[in-house]
Length: 224
Image (cartoon, rainbow, N blue to C red; front, side, top):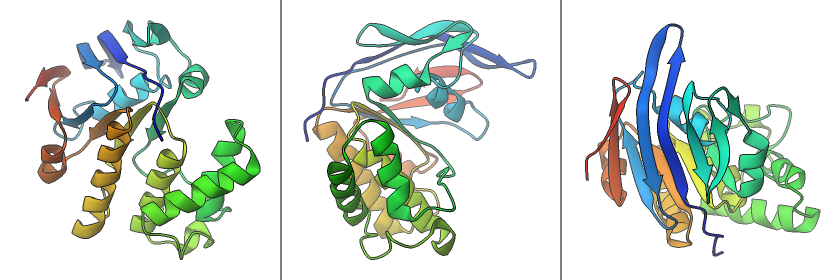
């Protein structure tokens, strides 16, 4: 499904956490339809940057705008606004709700976004099929393996049909074949017009993206 164009503009993002400068005047501008990899060593601040871009964490200074509308700035962040604008976060560690089934973990957030029940169910089924979990969607989260849970989390992000998809290590705990499926699905989101930014330690995954940025010691540089 085509996505509403929502360019990302992060300007001079700086954040200090625990007395340490994690991000130092990071600039990042991504256009709709782009698929970008974010690489860097563990602890470099990749996850922190994604949460700021998602409007869930306030930077010390700098501003994040989508189509000119600010969702994060010095000392403030508005995840609800970012979500309404179509900014989807696929977090590392999946953050699924254990008492629910995999399918319910996809349906419930859609209902919160105002999607009607029938459409939410249809989207969930399509997403589960896409991540190769069509036969396991009605299992409780605790009955799923770590890799299956990660795939549900990716499916939840896909079902939201966002204009921006921020994916934090979406292929962790996955075998090589499933890794390829997930990266292909993210590339398809970009082809539909979304901004897709994928943080990854996997060099193969990074190579599949159209562009790559590297984050280290708080500084962001473009690799290609």
